[in-house]
Image 1 (cartoon, rainbow, N blue to C red):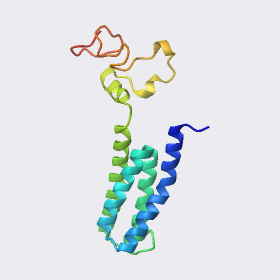
Image 2 (image 1 turned 45 degrees about the horizontal axis):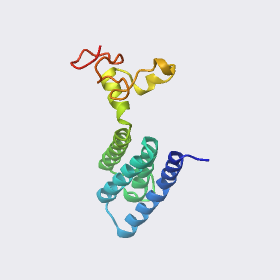
Image 3 (image 1 turned 90 degrees about the horizontal axis):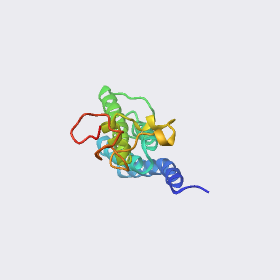
Image 4 (image 1 turned 90 degrees about the vertical axis):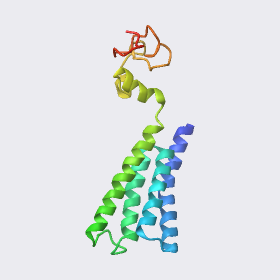
Length: 162
């Protein structure tokens, strides 16, 4: 019924609130300070992004920022911030965790997508809408750009088949 990828993504989405609740409860129980719990939240967000992709990571990042603010930054139990230095900490956490989530998710992209965009000028989304016989091929696969005589490589670098 559901593919393995769909089940993995569904589990990753379900893991977001569970992981954040577990980390928040453990941090409150242990009396963790803001820098410590911020680092732990960041590691959890990166793990969730690696497991579920960028959307899961970005959602976990925002949810972790809200938990971080509500439970660990004074005044506790509110989403307001009393000290200007805490604004810097909160915004830095959000930017770092969201950017890191994007980097982790991008690093797991199939290699031919990222190499293809750089070497041939085709982005992965430019393949959509092409008839199968007219689609540019990925470098190193089939008649890809690194093979002499390949027609999909549009650069003039040495080794290109055009």
